[in-house]
Amino acid sequence: MTHRAWLGLGGNVGDVELGLKVSLQAIHQSDGCSVETVSLLYETPPWGLLNQPLFLNCCAEVLTDLEPEALLVLCQQIELTGKRERIQRWGPRTVDIDILIFDGVEQADKTLTLPHPRMLERAFVMLPLADIAADLEIARRTVTQHLAALDTDGIKTVRHDGEWWRANSD
Image (cartoon, rainbow, N blue to C red; front, top):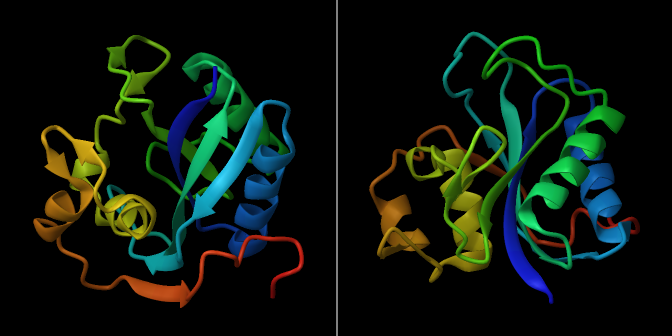
């Protein structure tokens, strides 16, 4: 059975745009996964821990045969390949890949909480998610409705089309 999942990706250490491209391509090339749509790429202020460089963020819609936990393992493996180090919560990172929504699954355990527990508070997630899933309902409201309640000041578009991640794009 094919599942639909939405991922949030970001980073602020090294060549972040390249790291995000490589991560999206790795997901797309993984068995049982296909990246269907990618948002624009945004430069965003840090969240949580403010004294750090700006981030680049995007969201992606993925079709997958994997179950949520297996998709999480894949995302964590790709983070490690991208030299992700978990040193400080909300701290600097080369790449971070979060499962935001997985086929409407609701779960909360020590490994994975779905939908992502803080996504509705984060303009750096909701703005790119609105690019690719504006009418998707989360907690009885659309992504667009949730986004309208958030402060998007300081967020700038870096790439103006959703094809920026493909190998042949600049």
